[in-house]
Length: 317
Image (cartoon, rainbow, N blue to C red):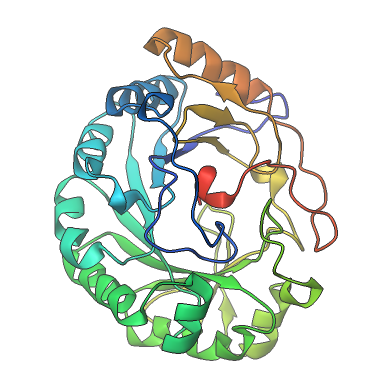
């Protein structure tokens, strides 16, 4: 389906839960969230009906997100059923990796093609500081399990944060030389409740390029990341410049929250509910959402925060 600005919408990001086993400072409050009533959240059947409705309109790529999707007890069933939906050609999942040591193989067997793992530092103390409760060894065990499970692609997602991890850019990028994985540096976004980051935290991805002079530009693969490769690397480096060089003109995605709200734009307060709808009603709501996509979001900075109205764990990272 094509929106009012000529963009073909082929990508759905489906959040299956707002809950998480970490408390990352840029994603959710320290005390977690007020757990919603079960009746407010999408059921598994509603999620699959939504995927079917989206696929009928041309969505081909599905990413399962959260919160942390692997805390969802029925995550394997959701993935298995979603992978079987006619029209879905690519099923990916984004996770913090904490539970991957046990679930990597079952997820692959359920039809997940690719996995993205959040990792902002290689320093155990800093990892605990940014996640508030996490331990690096568990996350790294998840990465190793993902590499062994045979996914088509494993990516590391690193949020670039000034004053926290810019001194680790070279060591994080070097993971692409040591392992068959990609590393993507993502500019920190000023979300609803990420107020403990000052102006200096919002570094542009030009800082990554400065510190990786040997990285050679690669052909775009159809995604939003600017791609590079280090000498003798097994994987690529991706730069996602959400603030300094936003990619709204090429946006091909919509989002569905765990409580059943379609968001035409991550940074817009607009939401359209599909909770309680039939598959055909969902299809109509997807069409309405796609036609409601704005041309672009407002400029973002430390002073000008996202208008999303939710934290990232409530939208889908």
